[in-house]
Image (cartoon, rainbow over all chains, first blue to last red; front, side, top):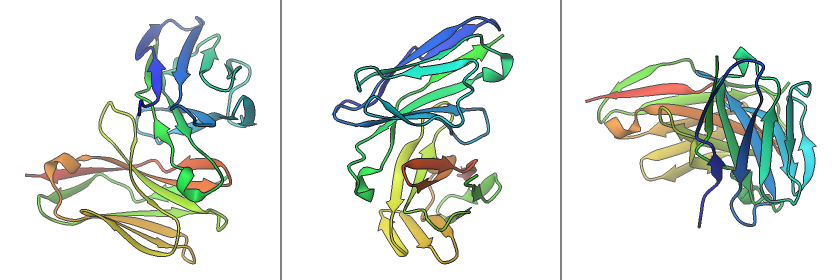
Length: 117
Length: 109
């Protein structure tokens, strides 16, 4: 079974530029998550999709961050304009989420390391 | 704000010893609990999940859950240098997963 795919793996941009990340979840996984992990901290949820609908985006800085999952499969996360404090690893995860706790396990992609100069 | 707290690290243990990691959470309504291992520069990988009170063993790992005390722990027996990593406790409320900051474990050869 293929895992969660993300691209690019690394990105270096200057502040005020824009950047986009892509994620393709495990086949059949209905729920997709984007996390931000700053060095030395645990992952922080930015947005959660159930199929192509948003379940939770309470911690997404909506003035600069946006995300979409138009066909309920792959997803993009965009930052425009970027700030220095956006330097982090952006992790995508997916889960089967069929109502039973055993289907709640989140599987993570390799992440995109963003450096904002 | 749902909170997940982990014991501060780093934790250094000699090879072959037991590493003990602790985690507390703020909301009694949580139903699923996970331990993830994260090597430096890598993404988190699931090592244990636990859903009911008591112990769950998987190889050298044992997870313990006490919902009344809002406490979950992870024991690593016979610690190996390959266990050196950051261990993240994660707690699910409804459909949202919240992570602790992690505890870094170093196993000394």
